[in-house]
Image 1: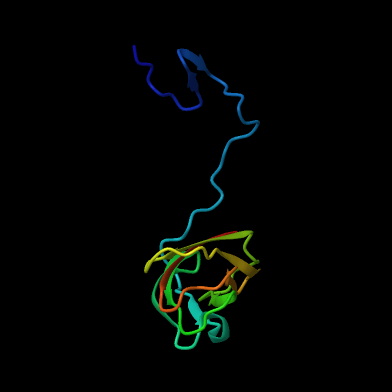
Image 2: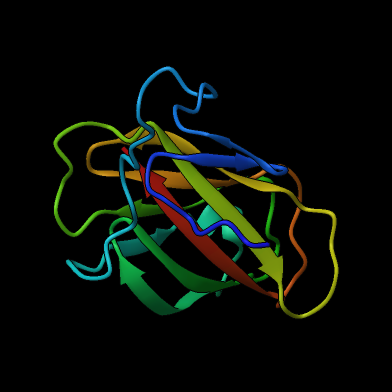
Length: 143
């Protein structure tokens, strides 16, 4: 026998809890990434990303998006680039999730977000990148 879902009830096994006690208050989603808005600008730190490095395929908006960095000659650890929001936020984000995939092969370089501010953030590489490899950078901003 199937018990139909009713708002405000939790079904635990065959027992129906009319007042679930898992959370003391209603759970409310605070923020979702926007599906529109202003596109950010991405600027490379040429001294870290290597001579001849480039940025391409910038897609998305201030709150979520992606771009590709192709490492140039002599890339080193450090700040890879800065992402400047198209429209400054009211306050600095609580967090910026950054994931980076080496689309040209496999490397052990880890990346993260630094210098979070209401105008943008920086993407940091913790070790040397691989010459001429393309890195897909995806980000999500949380306020």
